Image 1 (cartoon, helix red, strand yellow):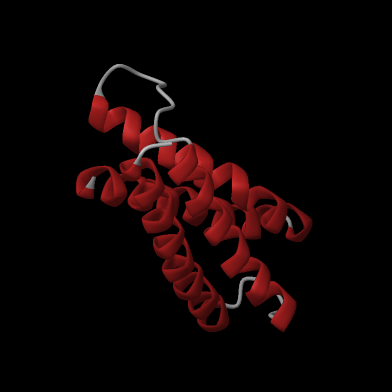
Image 2: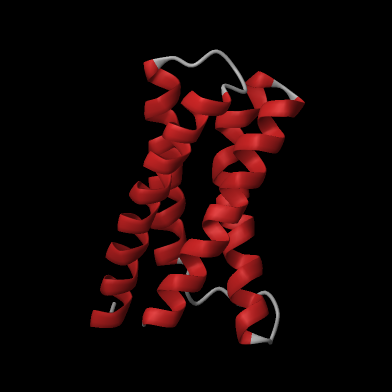
Length: 116
């Protein structure tokens, strides 16, 4: 792995942690489900994990358009990593945690791809 690949992973993880903290904070305000410390830790963990996968899978090509590929790739990774957190709580939580996971993933991938 080259230097840019390592920087991409580190930067994506940092943004994953950042968005995980935002997600945990927003969950305490919106309260889509009963908020427990474990749920908050899981929210931070899943966003951090999404950042890791986004960093590692930076070369994954879904479509030939670079910008569209970045946005789709980030959304898919963020959404899929968030599903285990969301599914046990039903449709409302899946929409909240899952869709926002996709949006956070999209943003992370976009920022990291622009910086590097």
